[in-house]
Length: 285
Image (cartoon, rainbow, N blue to C red; front, side, top):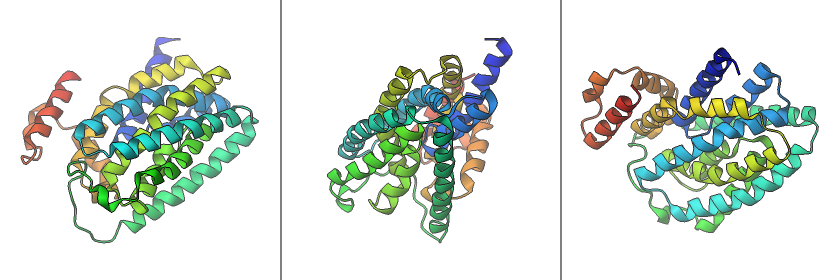
């Protein structure tokens, strides 16, 4: 692979990884159409290649959310185990379809997700008290019994296996709307849903020969760099209301371009977070 092409793939992965880190998803919903348009991949190869990037990203994102504390481990286990079963079944179906059929279905899925996210933004637009995201532990008494999480795991697993993405996109609105989780906690659980299923899905697509490893690995390297770290750090700095509004990209961009000398301007009420973020910036110099 030429150096210029390799650099392009890495930078593309970095841009996708930043958005994935900000919103708690792997970025595959951006990567799949990009791979199909830029490289001319079939829909199956585009989805399988995107999974090469998604797997390390969701694992890193899950680890960071877990380290923040407050994750409901029983819900995470139910979501992950259920998703594995349904991801494998859906991936087996997807690799056997005609590329045109799967691409048309993916287009319908993306349109539906756009409507869902627009509705979610409108629903959360009403005035509300802003609370720090990802800091306070969830009160498990306010959620349905953890076994009900299998419904979300099944839905997310089917989408992840059939389209290569979708589990981490649909899980947060379901978990916040019907299960009472806060946005940051729902994003962490979404990663718990996707992480094991993504590994199984990648293996299924690879077995069918629907993975371009050179592009996938280059995207993974770019997405696994500072873009992922900065995106996750920005999301955890924002309030729940910010995550549902248009403030998220602006806040993330501000944090990404803040010089190291300005880290003292981070919220003084969280000195440990300020020092951790400073270390992230230093390590990426």
